[in-house]
Image (cartoon, rainbow, N blue to C red; front, side, top):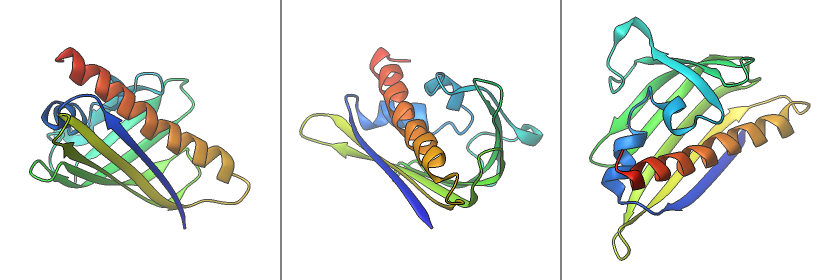
Length: 148
């Protein structure tokens, strides 16, 4: 199993950051440089455990379906798995967690994933997953800071 881990100090309060990242369908909103469209299948709410997010990459070549496994507003945690993807991974499970930095009113964010990947695809997949998490934190920070 491979593991990608990204952490960040986000210059926005945890409540504002969580308000952006808790929406399982908002990936293109806070990560617009990588993803273009997303919808929750079967018209389910985007915070319902078991709902499926179906989205596409901005370049039009990637398609991913992910299922929400955990969402906790109290603990600021979200976990999901990939059901199918053009990304060449297997057994992909990811978790994102936010914690309040009380002294500075900032947010500490952690996002990680474990998965299997063929050695030939490993460098590209590791970079893609790392970039996804890094850009998501940057986008969430910009939205949270703007009050949006």
